[in-house]
Structures are given as C-alpha cells and as structure tokens.
Length: 152
Image 1 (tube, rainbow, N blue to C red):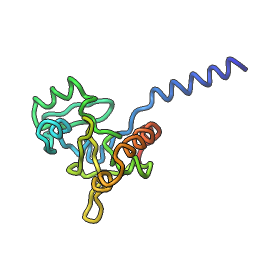
Image 2 (spheres, helix red, strand yellow):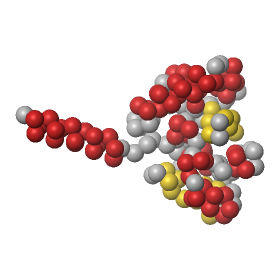
Image 3 (cartoon, rainbow, N blue to C red):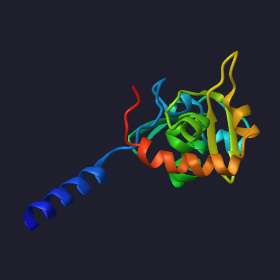
Image 4 (tube, one colour):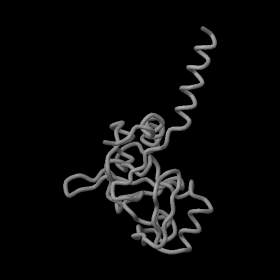
C-alpha cells in the first residue's frame, strides 16, 4: 500500500510539474501580438511584427524590432505579462480569466499587468480604484491555481 501511495504521489507531482501555463493567446500571440518589451522601453504598447517573433514557455510573442526580441530572449521573465496576459483585475477580484485590450495596461513594481477594456467597462480603472497591493496579492494567489486551467 505504501508503494502504491508513493507511486500515486509521484505520478501526481510529475503531472503537475509537467503542466503548461495557459497564456492568453486569443489573437495567436501573448498581449494580442503587441511587443511586451515596448511597454517598458517605449512606455507604450507597440504592435509586434511577424518577422520578430519567438516562443517562450509554449507561447508565441511578437516584437517591433530585433533589439526588443533580443532583450526579451535575454530576460523573458522581466517582460512576460502577469497572469499569463489575462486581465489582472479579473484574476484578482473574480478568480477567473478574462481577455484583454492590450492598450489597457499598467507597469507596477516592474511587472506588466494587462486589463479588459470596452466601451462600458475599464478594469484598469477598477484596479487603480481598489487597494492595488491587496489585488496583486489576491491575483498572485489565484493565479497559482488558474495558470494551469485552459480558458474556454
């Protein structure tokens, strides 16, 4: 019985570690194809080009220049959006994944957060109106479970 439980535990932990993070690639690329480095360097989102792209952690990213592509490949964790590129407010407050408007963003504590935005709702505004530190903590906690669940 001990061997069976050990085997079961090892099988589960191996499966969990082999799971892949679910990135928001609704338009084929993380951040809807916007250059994730541009948020930091240009201080605004810039659309990526097909000739400057790479894969990271099973997801595709586009960049506006070869320089940004190189910056990303040298330190991808610096530029990858939080919560797989899903709406930070939805992950934190609703414990769910929601698509984004790549032009609704905030860089806070050196991290890129993306948000849902439409004519009627702007979740970046809700994020800023709330206790952002608390929302970040809730988002980080919720993401630990959500990141392996495929969005439908």
